[in-house]
Length: 445
Image 1 (cartoon, helix red, strand yellow):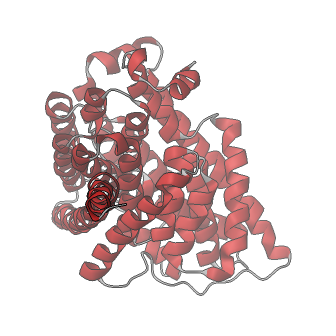
Image 2 (tube, rainbow, N blue to C red):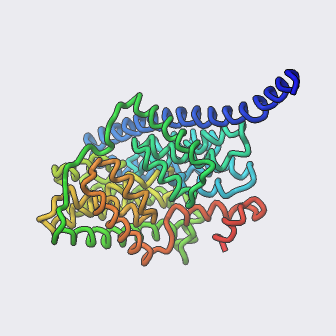
Image 3 (cartoon, helix red, strand yellow):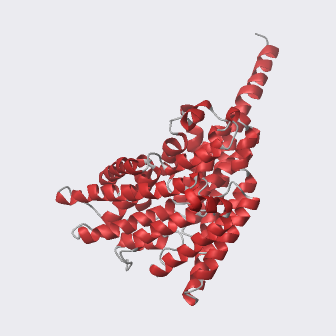
């Protein structure tokens, strides 16, 4: 082989093999850094939005009866008029986008415009007292970011959406392992070997961005609580069953409203969605009054207080937080259910403590947080990994696993499908069958 032929083969190899490969890897790296930065910005802005609402509430305790219904109605109108795919948590939209073949159909669910609207309307919702979280919206924002970058590698779009979703969870919770498991168990329901390295790289980049800006921290702080093997392990079963039933009930409410309620109520909701959102806001204001303001917002501070055993919350916090989160979700305004679900689980643990006073309240809260989340999303591995990483409690890993598995099985008795995948069918069903993956069509029946 002559030097000329060798040079030509080297040139072709660099042009058609090595350059595309490194361009693809750089794409995932840049996307991960961008998603991490957006997740941190959304976290800081969300905290400011909640502080603003709390400042108004502390000075004018009756303000939610005006601010919340009017705010919900205005946000619902803006969502339907300007950002029609930004409602709810955003995770169902990303699940649906991964199943759509048509690029235009995908763009309607995960465009940059939708992501910007998601951020804006989520912040407005928190300023109105919505019981919403930022983690689900971060998933849609992350997927939209990667989708926008995907123009440089259009054949990798499903993998880019998956990587953006995993990076969003990792950066939002400062839980990289949870982000990877979330991508495998919840978003794809399978392990994609070819994309695994790139997804992990994206998650690492997003996690490093969060680490560089916010520092090394555990989401809820470290909890030293333990559960020695013995009679106290009955708490695992009780937490799994009670939280699983509650999570299944919550999911069933969201799915039923999304698919349309029967009779006059269903027709009224469909005809007057903005008025329905305002009615949900008014009902949330009553829940807030009954709970002395504790059910507004993400529920982060209330959960942290319960974990530390310093909470002065009443026994009604858990049930009222569940209702408040359901009202915020079915209203049609943008907002996630991850953080509020963890708060509901912690509230259930606080209630169970009255039944099992010998078990530390922090232990019960951790078990019920994982169990309730597993009951809602029916993804037990993701649930126990997220809670384990957020509390950094390695002594409770086995009890958390068992509680999540029990809750997952119990939830299926109430609701046959996890809430995210059930809600994603709405976005798949709206598209033409030729634009949907065959596997997704089979699930739609």
